[in-house]
Length: 274
Image 1: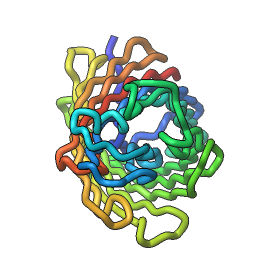
Image 2: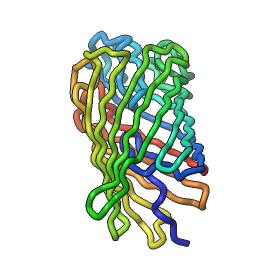
Image 3: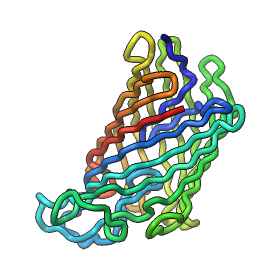
Image 4: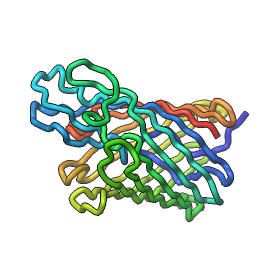
């Protein structure tokens, strides 16, 4: 069996491509995310917010003076449910919602989820609309635009987030694809929380039939939160087309700037059924 390359990457946290779900198809996805990091250096940062995903935040829960214990307040496990529908040719509608299932406490390691102290915007719903307006022609990549809105539907929700992204994907004879993302997002019109960035990535086959593919990307963002810092993250992983309707992906994230607003390490395990 040889798997066609009409399916885009689906498991990265940051990278997206210009390949919408085929018309008439619905993808259901469930993922488990883990992130750790955020060394507070003993500062009083309780209630501060760290970007864990485009619209997913982990709240700092207290002050730690013991260097061996600081990392635990940012250990976060969450499940995310996703639906992606190709409702027309070159158009895709998406719904995404994360649910906390466990987090590190500054006293006892991993414990029960505590949305008030440890996670805000839990179970908020993000709706997205994607339009591929240009197919690939030679070396000119396929191009797509996407808009997302995070609604305050969850527990202890804080604000509405919006994102606009342009994705470009180029496929080569070797089966390798390159991707460029340009993005900008803001929160309830607050210009001090407006930021932008880019993602550079690629994926390619690891076996003769293309059922297993490697994925890699680098994400960089300017003025990550409240104009306070830039943010650099590397992602590496694989995606496996187990059968026509079943896919499994595993991605790891590695923070490159050692900043409190960047996770030091994370991973995502994602399953997709079409």
